[in-house]
Length: 201
Image (cartoon, rainbow, N blue to C red):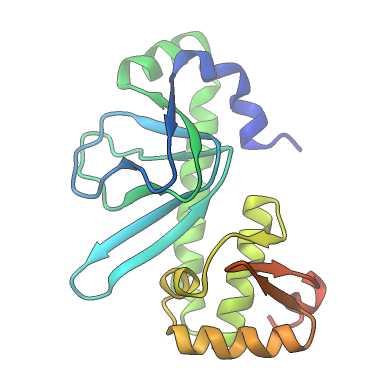
């Protein structure tokens, strides 16, 4: 299967290569966007701030993901680098030039939007499940999305991502750690037994 990351490799020359340090903001909630970003290297947190829920991590994405497709509308979220990152920015003109030469890119762009719609629906549906299910599903999603069993998140960040309290996160992770399903070292979560974690779904 050709991944989105592999598919975009030949088109990066049409965008502008940018470097962002850890904790840097790529784009900010409320600002108006006129292009989009392609995550080439690093990990980026998609964060929403509102009066009712406060800070919420909507998604954590790695290489091969498109972000910030606002189309002259205010961003509904911010993108903050979780690690040092390399991204490519495509302005409207860059995208226009790209599809003039490679019309097939519109399909890749549509696929990216469809994946985000599915993620949004999944996030809505998952809130009706048990806390164990929500945490297990979140960790498995991050493992697959970032292609790593090392989840570079603190328990507080996992709380902001799942919407569950830090105490709930702590209690469940402590049980799973004692059972050998996960381990916690240097403020990171390591998935030791993915199959055992899947059994919690």
